Length: 315
Ligand code: XMP
Image 1 (cartoon, rainbow, N blue to C red):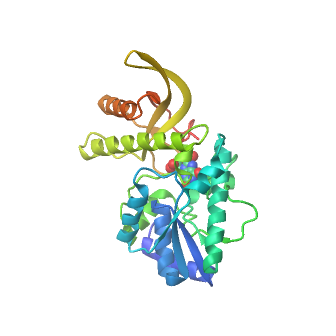
Image 2: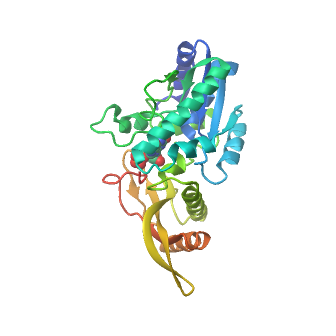
């Protein structure tokens, strides 16, 4: 982006033109939607409500962190607790695309209800270019239906406005720095949350395990980055795999599941490289995950596949 200030001025003018009445803003706490919310706040002020949904699929401590993050950005937001609704929508669903569709629909139904309550007809989202390109917007095949793009139901009662839809992540980060949004380098987190970090069926128990494993990977990678042992990766996370694998606990044989650790470098998520990381880091992560999830996770793997041929997330 050559001139973030020019983008800001134009985006604010476009938002004012696109939203004559009231709007709601879907905020995830990530950089994209926070930057979008920031522009909306400037463009629409009191005519917009910023909503942050606790889906039950968030990372450890995320709701609290997002609160701090928004307050640091000077943004007024509302927290909506909707865990039961999301787990009900996902019960028994194992197919990744079906997960995204169900989550997309659950989000939209919730936003429709909230919009009706405040007389809003417009939903503003922080969608960026790779989200819709990989959702089949331009390229050959649908790689993944991003929950906030192709995961939307057909009978949508709201007009969608996406002020960042032509930007790539590095441009959004540049804009975030320009607007003073905190933590512009924060790693991306998929909107469908931990539902796509548990490969296979979604249950509260499996999501809770994925939450523990993701927190450990984040803590250990951030510690290694702070100590200068590792360059800051693009993304670093854990995925719970529905693969029964035999382990041993004391004198007993136990069957748990496997966890895959993924640490990648990337510029814009369109391609990515699996990072070579210090073996000690992986050993510590494996020890901590198997200890914290004793008996339920019996094996930890490191994913060495680039994108392509893999994608960044497993699902
Ligand atoms: P993939 O896995 O397709 O991911 O290589 C590319 C980037 O997008 C994130 N991602 C998502 N973000 N909704 C989102 O908002 C989704 O459904 C979704 N799926 C993947 C992923 O974390 C990576 O940064």
